[in-house]
Amino acid sequence: MLTSKSRRTFLKSSIFATVGAALNLPRNLHSHQIKKYPDSYGVLVDLSRCIGCRSCEAACNAEQGLPVPDTPFTDMTVFHATEHGRQRRTDERCYTVVSKYDVESLEHPLFRKIQCNHCQEPACLTSCFVGAYTKTAEGAVVYDASVCVGCRTCMVACPFYIPTFKYSSSFNPQIMKCVFCYDTRLKFGRTPACVEACPQEALVFGRREQLLRRARRRIARNPGRYQDHIYGEFEVGGTSWLYLSNVPFDQVGFNMELPHEPILDSVTGFLGIVPMVLTIWPALFAGFHLLSSRKEAKREDPIEGRGPEEEK
Amino acid sequence: MEKLSKQRDTPLVAIFLTTVLLWATSIIGSVASEAGEAPETIEIGSLQKLYGPVVFDHALHMESYGCEQCHHRAQEEETDSTGTCRTCHGEEGQHSRLANGPKIAACPICHVNDAGVEKNNPGTGHYHTDTPGLLGAYHLQCLGCHALEGAITGCQDCHDFSREGLKRFYVLSSQPNQGEANAHQQK
Image: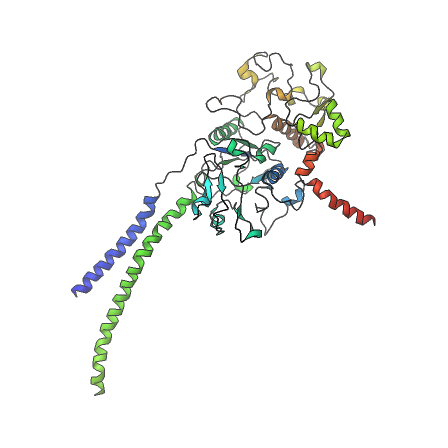
């Protein structure tokens, strides 16, 4: 009796300890600071200015040496071409695409340029177990194909669905995404190709901190024109690319449900439990198994003993 | 002007000259020194790279619109809360760029050629913080009004592609295919 009581108390206390630890662990891990890149560059995108001319797409294609597109960049029918009911997305042949949105409150359509937002705390970077991604001091999230194993976790991790896989060369895995013109321009503090090509100055290149100030001023100086929100200032810990819009952001395809905390914070709690589960659970369930099997053994013993007596 | 007219004659020279003239900062064409001497047409070719110059019918636009609608801010009589040049610079002449310049300022006097670049150095960026560059100023001003007025808004409505532009947008590479298609139709 004494042994079973102490076993019960041991099991009870161990379960409480496990639950307690599980509840406490995520909270302790939450205290992580979002990294700051004080002199990093960014781009401010003003959706109200974009006219959907696709000059940025053409410039990106030329700068990055991407393959010839199916139709010329003057072809505006691409805005209507949807794949599986979705707007066009970036793929291995284009690092940036412009999408068209018909907004009810406006007589004219709005256009939105999509490319890597170069997060302050990139989910692709944190998800990559071979460390193929780097966030440079200039603000670019760059990728090293030489170490990539082609697991494509970054594609799942990205909250903006940006990294794409070069399926045409699966044995030589390569992720294709906007690199902020890092090697050719950003490294030298030069304007990215898409920004330089924009005739409407819908894209402005500069230091991220300066751009945030400029965006706030633009909102303040044009009362009623813009949404009082700079998309990318806080979303998923902040992004290098920032957006101003004259209509609610969810009407132009922005995900407004993204947390202000980095994506990393959404998973550390869960991932923190994993090692604990792996160490405690086997012992715990082995204990349960032993307990139940012992009771069965005890019950079986007298029956087995009686058996031969009954036969007699 | 002379250089530009030659461009149309020989495409090879055109390629050379467009590269030479690449992002040149001067506005080609005449700028009125006084309101009374407004030019009939202005050939805007200062930024030509992917597109040829724009021949802007200044006289046509003068028929329907007041000077201040395009030559904004600097010449506005009434200051408003958003601020004009006068808000800070007071009466005419106090502005360094306008001091000895024409009464009606041409676009490049204030809109300098630095398309899409945050131009202020950290610490000093308190003024002229959101002035569009020349490329942006032309397009925002022209296209903004054209969209409102229901006028032409297509890229090639105002300026044709240069040879480099045709290449950049892959218009040139698709032309042989079109040519073949036409040839087949003729047969």
